[in-house]
Image (cartoon, rainbow, N blue to C red; front, top):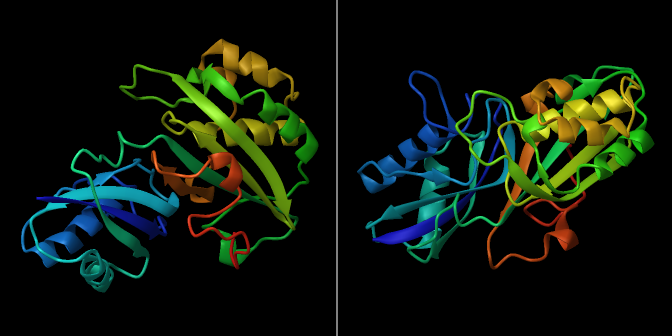
Length: 267
């Protein structure tokens, strides 16, 4: 048996998230169906993270085991021949048998995209959270610094969840403006359920003047979801990259996509 690692890019608009579910389309089920068509047997795909319904990915990582004697290049071409247009396999590589897409990960980079302008953007309605009133980016940046470090992030974890460890190490939280687009980049060793979206919703309330930047410390220490702000919509969230032990220093590449480019034609 060979263990293969695949990097996936997808538009999550029409999927009920990553994890296979009954009677609804999911990313995992769709890719597993493609694998089954190639291998002529059912294969189990393990993802690095269970993205929610509507969440997108530029660099989701998954792994599977197979005894089908295809090269990595053949697997890549066959997968893309069987996958729908809104899912793409970017790479396939052989990895050690002890590799696990989820448990071997040492860090993940997420981005959240806010479109901050007074007019609608029809082409971006399923790619960004549109906010029409001006946001105070300086106040949001000040509030974000309170979240960096190792903390109990219970205040940003949505229920229900069976997670017993609310501690995460948020290494970086960067905010940058690109014209009308505000990009928030989060890099951590692990994330709680909807943690990024909850942090974004709370930071937006700071940007709207609904809460003070310094109040973020109080939100953290409260360890209660009721202390934080709303959960931002799923369609503005992107899983950009998953790092493993052979990865570069995330501080050097946090502003990059999985392809190493900053100059996107879309947010």
